[in-house]
Length: 290
Image 1 (tube, rainbow, N blue to C red):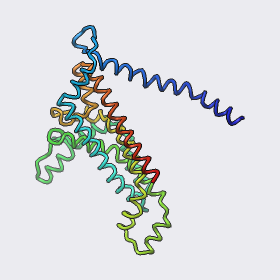
Image 2 (tube, rainbow, N blue to C red):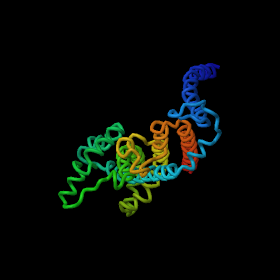
Image 3 (tube, rainbow, N blue to C red):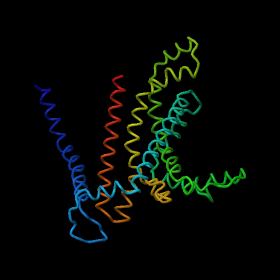
Image 4 (cartoon, helix red, strand yellow):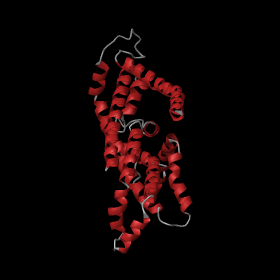
């Protein structure tokens, strides 16, 4: 009876927090849906007439949406590939005994704690600047023409910056997974004549499958809403070359002042994010069951 009573008290104690969370989520969502079905442009004052799904039609048929959608896929896919591949390599390296191991781990994890705006500014001005950047000086030293990254390779530049930020996170998760691997199994494999590559592909990599799935899920949810790095470096350009769905919604709401169209884009973005989350959760469930 006491256990039942304590559970009831715990549920009652959670009610205010859950109610606040629901209000915090539902109210903005309802307002966004409302604005998405009316003609609401801040530059054209009017009676905000109901237009149904016309904003959705304009948003989804806009060539900018098609390009930003593909850019979003490339951005998420590119960052996931770099962070997982690099994270596995760094995790295996950090798992080895070395001098100053704790300091090396701290340095590798440090980029994850840098604000996205700050890291984007550092990359833009100190590394990728075509005149004063470190890469430009290195190219001149080698007798090569400096590359204007944000003009010639805008989306790739954003992918590199975001990957640098998320690589420590993937490394930390994968390193923790590697350290949970039974060392006796590795020693037994060595006694049976297994080399480093055989141990990695047949023992370490399968053991990392669940951690890799978790990294994919968490990173994807955040990468779908990347904004600061694009805003600080390329502003979505040249043209729409580095514009993702999040930045496209920003341009329509705060630059074009079309609140109705931007709200329709926000609803579309929420639907896409939820569909991706559902698919990834099912994949994780199958992985965990296996």
